[in-house]
Amino acid sequence: MSADAWSGIIARTGDMGFYELAEKALALEKEGKKVVRLNVGNTNLPTPRCATDAAVGSMERLKSGYCSSAGLPELRQKIAEREGCDVDNVVVGPGSKHLLYGLLSTLCRKGDTVSFPAPYWPAYGLSCRQLGLKAHEIKTTLDTRWEFEPAKVMARRPKLLLICNPLNPTSTIYAEKTMRDAIAGAQDAGMHVVLDEAYKGLAFRDVPRYEGETVIRVRSFSKEFSMEGWRLGYVVASEEVAKKLISFNQVSVTCVAPFVQQAGIACLENEKAILEENRKAWLSRSEAAQNALAKAGFRFAKPDAGIYVFATHPDMKDSCSFAMDLLDRESIAVVPGSEFGGYNSFVRICVNQPEDVLADAIGRMGRYLENAQGI
Ligand SMILES: Cc1ncc(COP(=O)(O)O)c(C=O)c1O
Image 1 (spheres, rainbow, N blue to C red):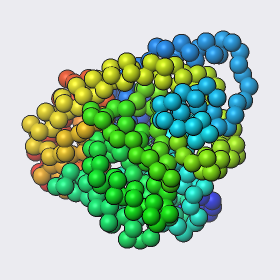
Image 2: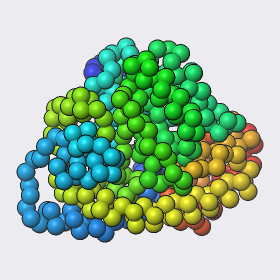
Image 3: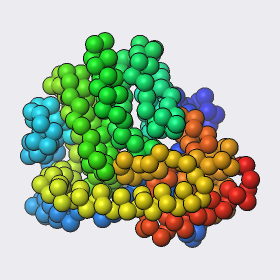
Image 4: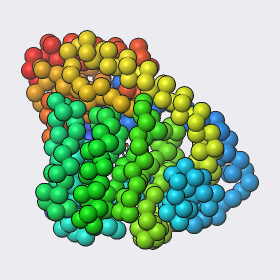
C-alpha cells in the first residue's frame, strides 16, 4: 500500500529509527548471531521475588475480573503514601509511556506546543507528531552538563512543559534551581509541567520532590523494579487531571491486570531494600562502562543515575551510520544520538550487561571507530 493510503494517527508518526534498529537487532539474534543489545532500556535484572510471588498468588486466587480504571485501591494507597499525596491524586496505568501519551492527549489540543529539553526520550517527539502537537525542543549541550535555561521554556508559548529527570539519555539530574525556576515560570503562565521520573529511584543521589498546583509526576515500575514487560506505572496529579486520565484509561485499556498491580504493591512494601540493591548494580555497571568509554576516547557527562551513558567520540560524525555499521559488523546495538533530538555525534549506551561484557563491547566500539576513521 502506498504511504499516503494510510490514514489515522500512525501516518503522522513518520520515521521511527529507534524502534527499527531494535527490531533489526532482534532479527539478527533470531538468525543465531550473538548480539550485545545495549540499545533498548531493558534492565536484564530479575523482577523482585516478592513481586512474582504476589502476582502468582493473585492468579491462583482466581481474581479474573476487571478493576477500576484508576487502579486497585490498595496500590493507589501505597503510591499515595510514597508520594505524599491523596489517593484521589493517583492514577495507575499500563506503563508510564501510556500515561504520558494519555496526558498529552487530554491536556493538549491539536496544534498546541509542547516544550521539552533536548536531548530527550524519542517517544516524546513521536507522541507529539502522532497527536498533531508541535514539539519545541530546548537544545542543551554536553559542555553545560545538559542543563537547560528555564528562560527558554516559554519562548514558543507552550501549552505544556515536559521534563525528564533524571534524564534519558544522559542519566544526569537537572540542578534544583533550574527545575524550580522552570516550574515557577510555567505555573505563573498557568501551564502544566509533566515530570517524567521513570528513573528517579535509580538515582545515585537524592532527587528533590517537585510539587505544585500544575505539576504532574509520572513514575514507572519498569526500571526501578525491573518490571519492564509487566507494564505498570502511575501518575500523581491534581484531582481534575486525574479524573481526565481515568477517563482516558476507561476508553483505551480499562485497567492494568490486577495481578500486575499486586506485584506493584509487593514492590512498594519492600521498596527500600529493592532499590538499594538495584542502585548498587546500576552504579557498578555504569562505572565499568564509564571506565571503558574514557579509555576508548569517548566524552560524556558523568551519570547521576542508572541506566544510560550518552557519549561522543571525535571519530564519530554520523551516529546513525555508526550504529548501523556497528550492529552489522560487530553485533553491538546502541542507539544513535540523532534519535534524541539531532545529537549526531553521540550514541546512547544502556549499561544493562555484566561489567566484563560492557568493557569488551565498548573496547570494540572504540577500536571500530579508530579503524573506520571518521564514520
Ligand atoms: C524517560 C522514560 N519515560 C518513560 C518510559 C516508559 O516506561 P514504561 O512505559 O515502561 O513505564 C521510558 C522507557 O524507556 C523512559 O525512558
